[in-house]
Length: 534
Ligand code: BES
Ligand code: MN
Ligand code: ZN
Image (cartoon, rainbow, N blue to C red; front, side, top):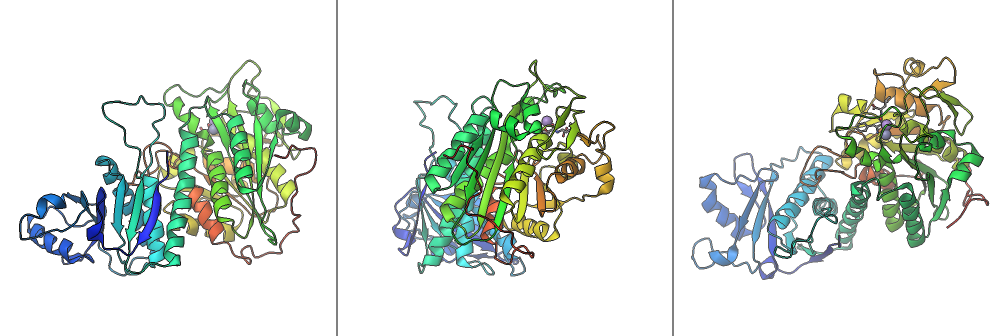
C-alpha cells in the first residue's frame, strides 16, 4: 500500500477542491450541535428536526455541496466534491484524555471508512477543538485512526479492470487556525505509530508459506540497514551450539529452518535497555498433538507477537528514542513431520532447565523460553517484555477485548496498563504465584510444558517465568486481540497489529528514572563475534 501524504494548512476550507471535506461535530446534552463552521451549523439547523443525524460518535452524514448551492437557503459554498459530517458524540469535560484520544482515533477510522466507500483520494479535515485534549494529541489520534482505518490487504485478489480498485487515501490536509511545529509533531507521531501497526498486519496477513522464519530474518536485516541498527540471526547450527533445545524441538517436525532474529537499537549515552521478545510461530498445526481442522488456517497468525516486535523496531528507527531497545523474535513453524518432537520427550532449554513435552501444541512457551533466557543473559536488560499469541485460555477469560498481562514487576505492569489504555489497546492483569507454578511440575523433568486446562494462561506464563530470573518481566498474551480484536472503525477484521502502539507508547513515555532500581551496566553492543552481523 502506498502511504498517504499529510499536511497542515491555514487556508480556508471553502476553497478546497478535493474529493472530501470533513467536519467533526459535537453534540450537546440538550441535542444541539457544536462545530466551528457557521455554514455547517446553519445547515444542521434545518436538518435537526428530521432527527436523522444526532452527531453520536461515529455517526456520519455525507452531502454534496455542489448540488446545494442553487437554493438560497442553507447555501453551502464549498468547492469540494463532498462534505462529510462526522459525529464526535457528547464531550462534557469529564472525559479523561485517554477517552478523548480514543474518540479521535475512532473518528479518524470513520473518516477512512467513508473515504473508501466513495473512493475519495484527496481529503481535507477541519481540525476540531476538543475541550480537555491538547491540539497536538488531537491531531495525533485523528491521524493515527485515519491511517489505521485506511488499511486493506488485497495483494492476492484479482484486479478488476472494469472497476478500478481503491488504493487508499492519497492526501489529507488538516485545516487549522494557526499552524505550529507541535501540531506537525503530533501528526507525525500518529503516522509513525499507525504505519508500524499496519506493517505488523501485513506480516500477519501473509500465509504461513509466504511469511516464513527466513522472512523474519530478512525483515530484521532490512530494518537494521535502514535505521542503522544491528541485526544478528541465529541459525539452526547456532541454536545447537548454544543449546536452545526448546526452539529446536518445536522445529523438529518442519522442513523450514528456524531463525532467531536479534535487532539492537542502541543510541549513544543511554544507560537503560529494554528487551522485547515476540513469538514468531509462522504456522501452528499443533505438531503431533494436532489441532482440529476447523479454524486451523488462523494459526498463520501465531506470529503476531513477532510481527509486533518487528513493527515496534520500525517505529523506534523512525523516532530514535533515548532508550536502548533490543528485539528478539524466535521464529519457526510447528509441524508434525516424521522427525517431530513427541509427547513424553524431554528437552533441555538454553538455561539448562529440562522440560517434559506433554503437549506439542504448547510450543510458544518453548521457543520463548530459549529467547528470554538467552536475551537476558546476553543483554542484561533493565526489563523484559514478551508478546505472544500464547493460549486459547486467554480468550475464554478476556474474550477478544483485552490482552492478558502477567508480570513480576508492579511498576512495569502499571506502565503497560497505562500505555494500553492510552493507545486504545486495553490490558487486564492476571496473577502469578507458586500455586500455578506447581501445576507445571513434572515427575521426570524440571517442568512440563502444559499445566492442563485450568488457568491455562497463567500456567503458560509460569513456564516463562522460570526463564527470566529476577529481571523485571511482563508477558502479554495477545491470543485474543492479535486478530478478531474488538471491531472498530480503525480495527479491521483479521489481524489488528495489537501491541505495537502500546509498546511504542511505553517507549515514548520512558523516563530515565523509569525503573526504580540501579541501572545495569550495558556495553555499547553485546553481540559477540562468532555471530553473523549484518
Ligand atoms: N497458538 C496457540 C494459542 C492460540 C489458540 C492462539 C487459539 C489463538 C487462538 C498455542 O500455541 C496453543 O496451541 N496453546 C494451547 C496450549 C495448551 C496445549 C496447553 C492452547 O491454548 O490450547
Ligand atoms: Mn500451539
Ligand atoms: Zn501457538
